[in-house]
Image (cartoon, rainbow, N blue to C red; front, top):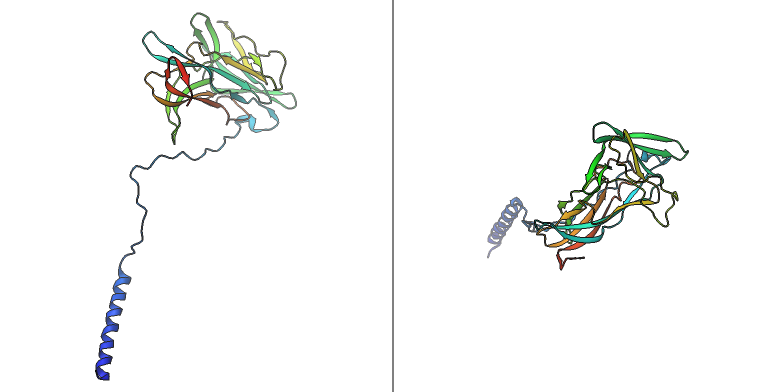
Length: 276
């Protein structure tokens, strides 16, 4: 091949390579992507921030209560006349704060009272704060009569357990409790004698005082009226939760420790509740 022919052939090759390069440069990117799963496995939610002390309890100069619940205990199964299965449990509410839970009710209707909370300061003075949505109710307990009780004091709930996400299942009926000094808690500071005694049964009372002293506990047994959750037809692993002040009515120094739980496997076997 003469020199002129060689130069012509080389020019053709270079032109082809240039055209191919331009074509490739104009094509869209073909980067690889991880396939998206249509139904991904649920994952646990991000941790929630710890709530700050509420109201006056944000001030470290105040001696506020700190309500803590022991895990549900003395689990028992009862069957109603209609065949429903009820899971009962004992609640134990402890005040381990620097000050008492001190509540004062004032009659506003025939069987209800508005509520104020007394909070003591380190210097010995105190201030009473209205709890806007809190109420005392004159509540009937079959076979015992009526008692003044704090509405929405505690709540019993059943949640799924053992999976990536725990979901709410059911709620117990009972939410009204009389706050009182039932027993002193060993190892905790506090008064040696009761400051908040038996629950008032006075139908004509214009004011009622109730609460839990520092280092004391309030408790009701598993067989108490309505102290249960309906578990009829449930199968699997569940968490029985006790929640103090579920609506956040009461001022506390620590709002993050108001829940405790015990895991149970349902249905019960031979009338006994197992763990899971």
